[in-house]
Length: 156
Length: 152
Image 1: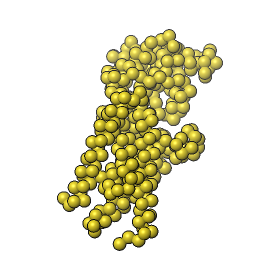
Image 2: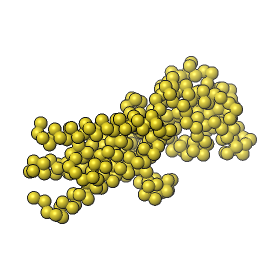
Image 3: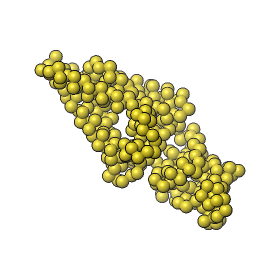
Image 4: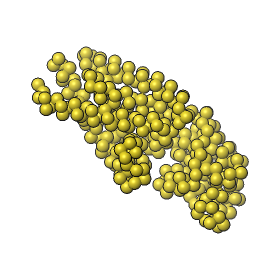
């Protein structure tokens, strides 16, 4: 049985995931070519068609999943997509970090948070290292919420 | 499969289907959509942007002028791929530059059509996914970096 405090805490975590997903989606949808360029900069050994498809579909997966998480009704499908997307971001940025690629992660539009492009803060927030650590933390949160959702579903 | 898993799969499938439909429709209607290689037209860029990307090793700079012009002087860091020799040299170029590597192509100046032609060919015929053209070319670089005169 969850206490009200636990319930509020988990609601905040779900809103956090939803907000990050919507934020990430809006920046990408504003300029799909820029996002596609960011994907290419990761130098992943993937076919060009798959990268183009990802650039087209991924922002909408983020937006829809993020909105459903913010909406708040039981949506294990949205949580599952959030988990998968954050895990993919963690892998993508992690390999870039390990390979020492000096890239902009292409994850979040920092202008929406008032951070000037090209500033030292933007460089750090956009670095593969910070993006990887952030994605790992968000993956862990999504996994925790999904497991909790499953337990709540079984108890209902 | 229990009811939780079947609900999860059903919802995830619905989200994916909606994202596919919205993504394809938005991409087709957006002026900043991702183009297929066959329809790709090279994006245009300018030296200050190229300089920054080059310093960060995020692009390969390609000189589309003749080998003789390249020998006489070129932008530091550029590789030579003369447009008239493109078909003969593309195999060697492809071995050294993966199709996922962003490229910026330049030639002599605004009057020179080779950079646009080479950028279009690399994107549409040879599958390079991120090809940009620097229309100001070598003249723009000389004006900005070498005071308009020097030919390193």
